[in-house]
Image 1 (cartoon, rainbow, N blue to C red):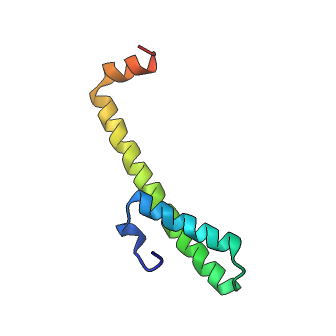
Image 2: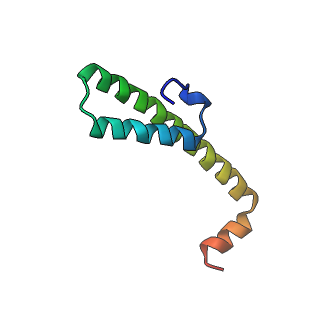
Length: 78
């Protein structure tokens, strides 16, 4: 998945790619240049994950505002 554009990935795909990079950085002895490339790629996947989470949060907020009585009931334990 290393050659895939992070912007085209779902949250789950980007997270998996990020986890693979973390594993490679943690477990493999590699040269400094490769480590820097992996780190930079990991940052791209992390940004994608954060963007997708932000989108989900915005959607949840919009939906919650449409049902203020229901959300308040849920928060009060009703």
